[in-house]
Length: 358
Image 1 (tube, rainbow, N blue to C red):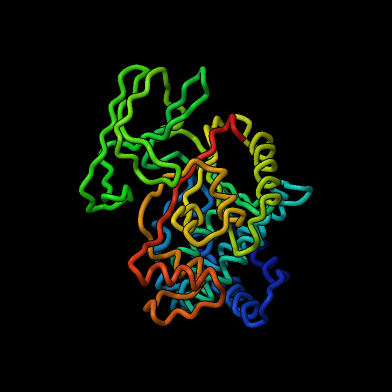
Image 2 (tube, rainbow, N blue to C red):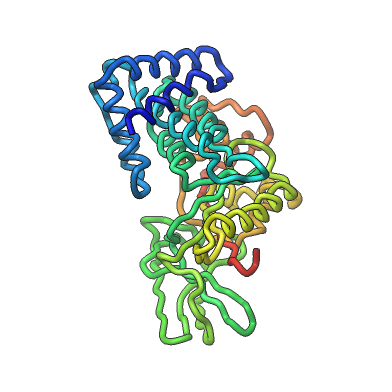
C-alpha cells in the first residue's frame, strides 16, 4: 500500500493548478512527505482511515496531526492526502459520466480554493475539508450543474402517500417547535405531535411556503413513503454558476441513469435537498421566473432552521464578520441585507421529490 501511495504522490507533481503559489505549496508539501518516512507513514495512516472503510462524519474537521503540522504547515497533510485520493480515482477511471470520470478533481479544487479564501491557508481545514472528502471518498458525485450524494434520510418530517390518489403529505415529526408565524424556532411556543394508527395519520403539515400549518390534519388511507433511515439521494448546488432550468433538468436526468448504472441495488425513495436556496423567504424580493424560485418549485419544501452561515458562505462568500462590514455587489445581496436589517432571517429549506415523480 505504501508504494501505491508513493506513486499517487508522484502524480501530484503533474496536477494543474490555477494559481502558481498554490501549486508550489502543494508540490513542496508532497516532496516533504516523499522524503520523510515519518510523514509518509502519517499520510498512509490518514489515507487508510479516510478511504479504507465506511464514510466518516464531520469529526474529521477536528482531526489534528501536530507532528505533521509542525513539518508541513497547518493541515497540509490533509491537502496532500485528498489530492492523492483524487489522483487514485482518476487513474482507476472510477465512475464514468459523459465518457469521463466524475469531476473529482474539479470538486476538490473548488473546495481547495474556498479553503484558501476562508482560512488563508493551503492546508484543508474545517468544513471545506469535510466537503472535499465527500467528493473524493466518493459519496458525492458532480453530474453537470448539480452534485448528488447517497444518504440516509433524516429530515424533520415524514412523507405519507395515498397509493390510489398519489397525493403525498409531509407531516412534521413530533417534538418540533415553531413560532407564531409557523417558522422553525428552537424556543418557539408551539410543539408538534404526530400520531400514526394503521393507514391514518394525524398531525401538522406545511403551507406552500414551507411554514407549519397550525390546522391539525387527519388523513386516512396513506402509507409512509419517506421516513427516517430510508435511502435517499441528496441534491447539492455547488459553486456559484447559473441554476437555469435546463441545466437542472439535465443533471437530474443524468443522476437517474448514473445511480441506476453504478448502484443498481440502491432502493432510494426520493431526491432530497437541504439548502439556503430552498429558503422560500427569498421570494419576497425574487421574481417568479428567477432561477432560484424555479428551483424551489421542483421540491416540496419545509423550512428547517435559521442559519447565519449562508450569508457569508454562499451569498457574500467571505469570512464571517459584522453585518455592517458587508458591501453588496449586486441587487440580490442588497435585498438580503435590507431584509436582515429590518429583523428578517435567512433559513435553510428542506425539500423532496419522490422517486416516482422524477
